Image (cartoon, rainbow, N blue to C red):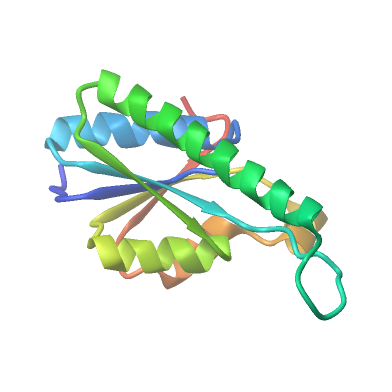
Length: 149
């Protein structure tokens, strides 16, 4: 078995992330290494004129941040119940770019990422964060399909 020093698990809190989290926990436990759980929030882009965004947008953004951080704390609790050392990172930006940046910054040896399993036209139009991470990562990437156990 390969030996790792730090595993990164990016999550979007979707069902596709759950199997990847289970695998990341199992691997971190087996290798006795810390797990870094990352969430990248993509803020909505309001179509506004010059000047400050309306307060309703700022409120929406604040609520989205709070919700994401709460969900991230829930994932951290789950990981810690499994007796795995872990930390969370919350950033805002483009998911693939931020995942790659955080992987370099944390010196992750492995990225364990879930895939939605989109095919055909939906993948063509929506793109694939996991695919870009696999293509551009400096460390190994383990992709776990949404239906993975």
